[in-house]
Amino acid sequence: MEASALSTDMWLVLGLMAFTMVMFVWERIRQDVTALLVLVALGLTGLVPVDQLFDGFAGNAVISVIATMILGAGLDRTGLLNRVAVWLLRKSKGYEERLVMLSSAVAGMVSSVMQNPSATALFLPVAARLSTRTGVGLGRLLLPIAVCVVMGGALTMVGSSPLILLNDLLVAANRNLPSGVATLNPLPIFAPMPIGLALLAVALLFFRLFGRRLLGRGNDKGVAPGRTDSYFARTYGIEGEIFELTVTSESPLVGMSIGEAEAQRGAPLMLALKSGNESRLAPPAEQMIWVGSVLGVMGPRETVVDYAQNNLLRLQARLRNFGDLFNPSRAGISEAVIPPTSKLIGKTLEELHLRKQLGISVLAINRGNEVFREDIRGMPLRAGDLLVFHSFWRELGEAAAGRDFVVVTDYPKDEQRPHKLWHAVAVFALALGLALSSGVAVPVALMTGVVGMLLLGVINMDEAYAAVNWKTVFIMASLIPLGWAVDSSGVAAFVAQITLERFGDLPGWALLAVLGALTAGLALAITHVGATVIMVPMAINIAISTGGNPVQFAMVVALSASNNFLTGSNPVLAMVAGPAGYRSLDLIKVGLPLGLLYLTVVVGVSLLLF
Image (cartoon, rainbow, N blue to C red; front, side, top):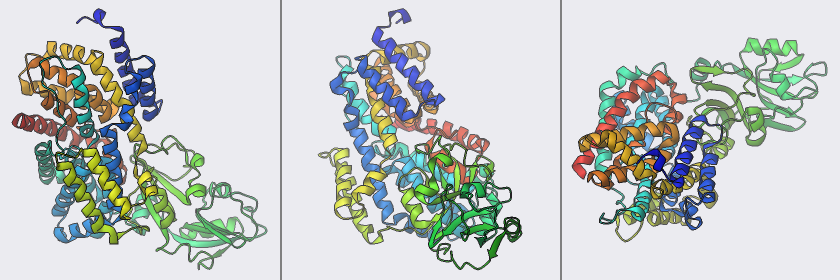
C-alpha cells in the first residue's frame, strides 16, 4: 500500500503514535497527561467509538495491575521480606556469591506475581539490610536483583505490565481478524513460565560467571547504607555530633528564618528547633528564630564551635532539650530514591515543603556521580535521585506509603503486622489457585485475594488505595484504546506489509528476532506499555500474513517490551542506579550482552513452545 492510499483514519492514528513517541521522549508534558491527551483525541476524532473509549479503565489488564499492587503491599505489611532477609543470610552462610545468587533468584520469583517496580521497591531495604550485615557492596547486589526482577516478570501473565496487557490485546484483535483465522484466546496465567525460567536461569548464570568482572568487587559502590556514621561521612560528607545552640539576645540570628540561617556560609545542618515549650524535628524553612530559641544542629565540633562564636550562640554538647527527638530508635538519617512514577519529579524542595508537610529534612541529593549539599532547595528533582533524609522513623514510614519515594535504608517500621503473615500467605495462595482454575478469570481471582486481605485485616482500605500507583494505571488505561485504533484503522496491517516487504524473506526465527528488537528499541522511547500497545497488533498481522502463530508473535513482542537493561527509562534500573552508584557505563557493560541474551532466549524458547 502506497502512502497516498492511506485513509484519513490511518493518518490520524499515525499522527497520534508519532505524538506519543515524541512527548514520551521529550517529557515536556507528563507521560500520564500525554496518555490522557491521546485518549481524548481518539474520542474526538471518532477513531474509537465513545461507548468503548473508556473500557480500558475497566479492562482486565488494569484491574489485574491494581490487584497485584495491593496484594504486594499486603505481603509487605506482614514483614514477609524481613523474614526473607534473615533466611537469605542464614542460607548464604557469609559467602558473597551465594548471597548474590540467592537474593537475585528470590527477587525473580517474587516478581512473577508482583509488578516489577513494586518488587524492586520491596527488595531495596532487604538488599540494604543484607549489605549492612555482610559488608557486601550494594553495587554487587542491586543490579543482579534488578535484572532478575525483570526476568522473573516473564514467569506469569501477571508479572509485568506488557504480559498483563497481552490478553486484552489478543481478545481485542479478534474484532479485526480476517475470515478463516482462528479466534485468539487469552493465555493461562503460567503460559510464559518456560520462557521466564530460561530467562531467570540465564541471568543468574551470567552474573555468576561475569558479575565480579563487570561490577567489580562492589567496595566502591554504595556500600551498606545502614545508618552508620562512617557511611554517611564517606558518601555525603555528613559527619559530626549533635549539639544544642541557644540563641542569645545579641545573636544576629534573631528574626531570621531557619531557611536564612542554614543558607549562611559554614552553617551546620539544622535538624531541630525549640521555641517556647514546643520542640520540633525538621523545622520548616519559614519558621522564625527568636531570643531563647534552641537549635539542634549536626556537624564537626570545630565547625559548630566557630558558628556558635560568630553568631553569639550558647553551645551545649549535652542534649537537654532534644534527647528524646534524636533517640536513634525514634529518628535518624536515611536514604530514599525517587522512582520514575513519583509526583515529586520536576519540583524543587522549596516548592514541596517536605519539612512542613512531612516532617522530613533533606540533607543532600545524590545525582549520578555528584553529591549536592549546598543550595539544594532550588534543584528540581529527577527520577533516580537519591535523597538523604533526617526524620522520625514514623513520619518517614507514613510519607513512604505515598510511593513518591522508596526508602533504601532499613529502618524501624510501625504498622507492621507480622501476626497476619500466614493469613496473607494463605489468601495469596488461594488467589493463585483460583487464577489457575479454568472457571475463574485472572482479575477476579486476584481481586478475591485483595478482598480476603482486607477482610482479614492484613491491609486496610486506605493502605490499599495508597498501594496503587495511579500514574501507571492511567497510562495503561489511556493507551489501550490507541492499540485498538492501530488495529481497527488498518495501520497495523499497513506497517505489517512494509515490514514484510523488507524482512519477509527471512526465516521465521529471524522475523521474530527483528520484531523483538524493534519492540525493545521502541520501548526505550515510549515505555514498555506503549511499545506493547502499538507492536502487538502489528505482530499479529505479520503472523497471519506469513502463516505464523499469532499468539507466538504477540508473546515475543510483549516479552521484548521489557528488554531494556541499558537506561533509566526502565523504572527498575532507575530505582537501583542511585543507591548502588551505578554509572551509565556500568549499565551499558551489563545491559548490552543481557539484552542480546534476553532476545535469544525469548525467540528460542518460543520456537519450542509454539
